[in-house]
Amino acid sequence: MQTWQQQLQQAFKTPQALLTYLEIPNVATSICPTSHDQFMTKVPMSFAKRMQKNNLNDPLLKQVLPITAEQKHFSDYVVDPLQEKQFNHIPGLLHKYHGRILITLTGTCAINCRYCFRRHFDYQNNNIGQAKWQNIFDYIQQNSDIEEVILSGGDPLMVPDNTLHKFTEKLAQLNQIKTLRIHTRLPIVLPARIDDSFVHWTKQQPFKLVIVVHSNHPNEINDEVALAMQRLSNITLLNQSVLLKEINDAPSILATLSRKLFAINILPYYLHQLDKVQGTQHFAVTDQQALQIHQQLQALLPGYLVPRLVKEIPGEKNKTILLR
Ligand SMILES: *Cc1c(COP(=O)(O)O)cnc(C)c1O
Ligand code: SF4
Image 1 (spheres, rainbow, N blue to C red):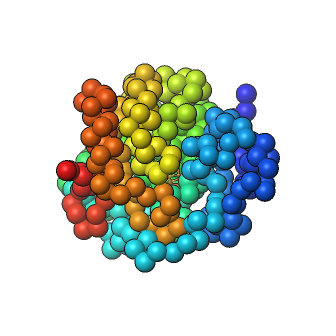
Image 2 (tube, rainbow, N blue to C red):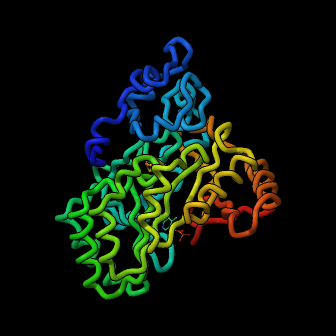
């Protein structure tokens, strides 16, 4: 069995390699080299294995294949739709919401999702090496309302366990943080990340641990993911999805996703409306459609399996729940 780091190294890094593996002839596609250059293709084999061969419309493939549609510009799709720069008090730290701060330990991910805001984010200037951690700890101490630290990204589980360990050891010394939340797509796209060493780390934490995974489609949940999640049974597990046109914009797909998540102890948390990021307009579902899909989803599922439909509106003190 390969380690997660080895699997990462061997991830597909060109659209051609991925399509060859999927037995899709190049001529059948609208691959765009410019899109790939702007935001490199990156797909672990573990995730690619869950795609259907010879199907250009596979819902997992569509999330990761760089296509020409990304090059079309729309005036309302911008580089920083959340205007987060103003909340970026110190590099790697976002304090927008009461009681919780978001920290970016790394800018990288195991997979590059085409709809992601990260495609334009300036991680060069936001990369907090360990040398700058103290700035973050100082900030937390100066803001006594902060009780929850959210590790986000990039993908925080891209950092090695000994780095995580060093970070949380220092964080624990502040005696202020009750909850540590990790937003990560790795347990879904690279389940090997949940190895003995990581499980050991989770068991040592003095905080209430919450892991929010990111899965958009039921085909992403397979036995490998189930086994990984089983190892985290001592942790609160939640999922967030992004509503994506022609990928998961159907109540039946989202209902199946919720049921499959619940079967492996993950509760649906958020269903996000896409942020208006340049190059992602082809993934957008209108608010009206989103509300309709969400309403139909409610009719299919018990309340606890219905994710909250949310949208991030710059300047709001929390994520905004979309209502009819
Ligand atoms: C989403 C988000 C959070 C967490 O919000 P919850 O509603 O608690 O899940 C915190 N900080 C930032 C900047 C966020 O975007
Ligand atoms: S931050 Fe999440 S959505 Fe964005 S590329 Fe990384 S894994 Fe994908």
